[in-house]
Amino acid sequence: MSSIIFVGIGGFFGAILRYVIEQSFKKMSLFPYGTLVVNVIGSFLLGCLLGVTIHHYVYLLVSIGFLGSFTTFSTLTFDSIKLYKNKQWFPLTIYITLTYIGGLSAALIGMLLFI
Image (tube, rainbow, N blue to C red; front, side, top):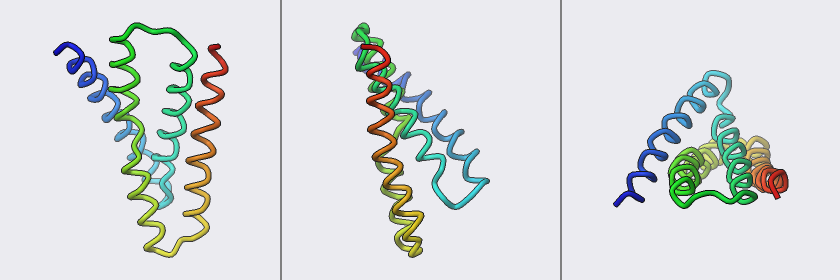
C-alpha cells in the first residue's frame, strides 16, 4: 500500500508541473513547445536516475510517480495528430524529431553525468 502512496504523491506533483509548463508555452505558439520541453527534461532526469543508486521508495516517488506523470506519450501523440490534421508537415517533422532525438540524447547525457 505504501508504494501506491509514493507513486500517487509523485504523480500529483508531476502532473501539476507539466500543466503549468505547458500552459506557459501555449501562449507563445501553436507549436507544442511545452510538451517538447517537459518530455526532454523528463528524459534527462530519468537518465540521471539511471546513473545513481536510489532507495526503492525514492524511485517510486520520483521515477514512476513524478516523472511518469510529468512526461507524457499521450500528449505527444495528441499534439502530433493535431499538426498532421492541420497539414503542418514541417512543424510535425521537427516536433517528432526533436522529441525522440532530444529525449534520447538528454537521457544519455543525464545517465553519463552520474556513472
